Length: 111
Image 1: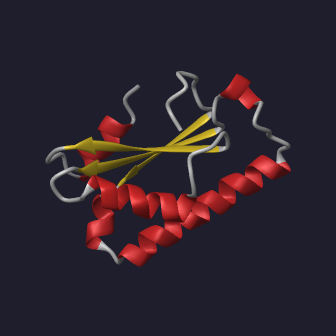
Image 2: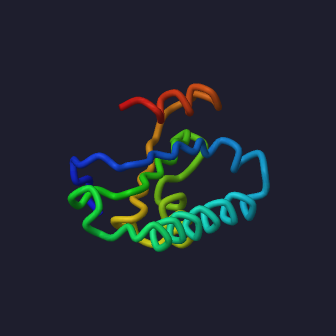
């Protein structure tokens, strides 16, 4: 899904540094749980694709070190865990270089 230029209602920033430090299965479980939770919120809140005039309700920004992680592998893993970006949950990868945990979070939160 191409960026629409519209602003989501909720943005979630995840730094992917801990995926390297913990079991990858834990990170996959987190992504799947996130998809389930945002879908449940969407259904229970009667949020539809028209919410926010086409803007996604939730945006997930995954910040990762492009030296530590291969973008195509990460994109495949995220797509497999979350499905394609849609109007309920739009996700995107945000590559940075040599930033570390806290800087990853701060950079991901910038507008």
